[in-house]
Length: 160
Image (cartoon, rainbow, N blue to C red; front, side):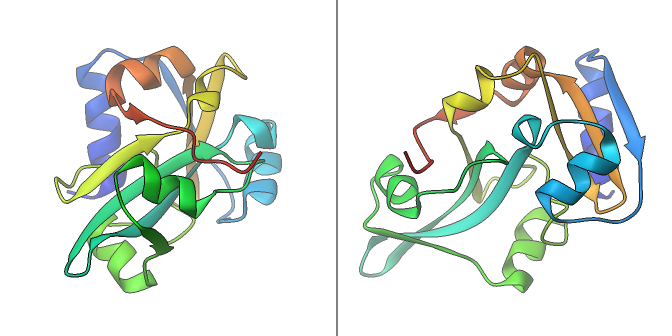
């Protein structure tokens, strides 16, 4: 089952109202916000990071934050007790999420990928929007429902 299908199945199982928006394929936050008719700041951007915990221990994190902000990789590392964070190569991101870069939703379906969300995502808009596991489809849903279903760990992940 694709991430696109898993995501919709999860939302239906939790009886979440959401809007599925089909649009031209886009991976850039500004471009996709225009296509879906939302503000860039409503976007939930998801980055797959590798965090060095010790010299031979690594952890993978899905860092989620508002799309109009910039991730602070040092903050991502600190949030999980690590020393340094970096973005993973495209191939590893695809392996961990089942998605292309730019299509990764703010949910994880992989136990090896820890979900970590910046709390500002929950305070700025009543609804959030994000790619639905594909570059040509997005989901718009209530922010409170996202936090209830995803139940993410929260930590400051963005640059001031």
